[in-house]
Image (cartoon, rainbow, N blue to C red; front, top):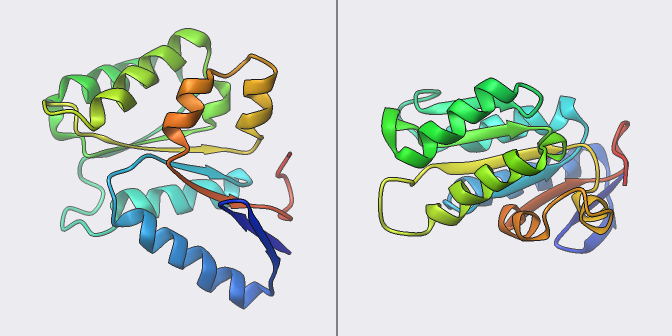
Length: 164
C-alpha cells in the first residue's frame, strides 16, 4: 500500500498506515486550515469527522456533515456557516467533487472568509474519491477553490476505490 502526502510516496504496511494516518489527523486537527481528504468514502468520511470533532469539549456539537449531492442542505449549511449564525465550528463536505459551479462559488466565499476577522470562523473539511487536480484540468472544478481547500491534504493511494 502506498501513502502519499505532500507529494511524497512510500510503501508501508497496515500498522504503519494507521500510525501515519493518525499523525496526519492529529496535525490537521490542531489547525483551523481547510483539510482535503482524498480517499475512498468509507475511509475519507470517518477521518474527516474525526478531524472536525478533535480537540473539542463539545464532541459533535457545532459540526455538520453534508453530502455535496444534497443541494438544499448544502446551501443552507453554507449560508449558515458564512453568516456565523448557529455556532457552527466545522463543516464536513462529503464528495466535494460533485459540487456544481454555483455551489463551488458559495463554498469559496466561505473558505475565503475563514481567515478574515468577522463571524465566518467555520472550519471546512472536504472529502473526495477522485482527483480534484484532474477536475481542475478538465475545467469542472474551480482552481482557486482547489487551492483554498488543499491547505492540508491527506491522500490515501492504493486503497480500493480511489480514482487518480
